Length: 304
Image (cartoon, rainbow, N blue to C red; front, side):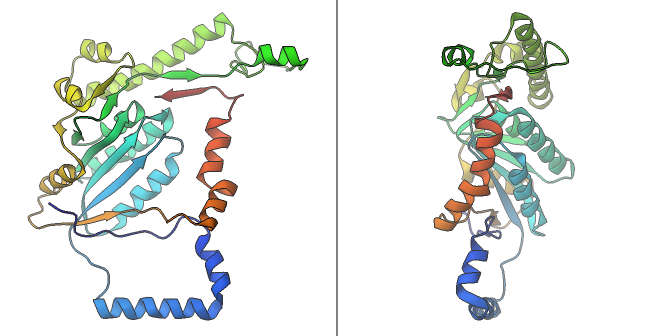
């Protein structure tokens, strides 16, 4: 079933404001009038039953944009089913959890949800896929990687050589554990191992609920190994081998659509000088670097 139609949402960046200033008020009015004439000639935006495609790419860092995209897709009155297209190695635990829960709410409201993995659908990204009624993977998809990592950076030896000393006043021995300024102690490591184990238990519980496997089997797979899509099918971690179009066909069938549906997506704005400046200055890239990449003083727990 070929994709018949795509819709876009308003740009996410401030590029349009800058263009509007350059064009001036008269140019903006002209453009608006042209758009109105165009829609009047072609009969407006196409309507009818649709399959929405939510695209989740790259490392899971911030759930806000994903949830905003989901809300936009569901606002279309024609949306009859949802396909979640995932190409991600996983990432922040709470991002995976919040997106998973949001998709479960969509499913609970009676909308069919189908997951489609691209090159990678691993760890936290695999958890997101578990919210779907059916999970598709390509034969060559890398999935699995069921596990948790506690990441921290220690540069205590370097600071000592440089003659740099960090001091702090704490409320307990675990406060500030994992700081870049000092190595983690064995007692702290034991504590964080317990935290990691609890996160893993939560992941396993989701798999048990969604895949119908016994706990011994899931525990045996939850050691961080990756699997190809074909291996994952044999292990019952996914339901079908197929690509995005196959997932869309499945979603349309689950929704009971007898005619070719519209395909609606949230498309990224094309890159330009303005969007690059926005991303570097105050957009996703800056937030990601500040909150996730450069958080040397903040240990990170991740499904990856």
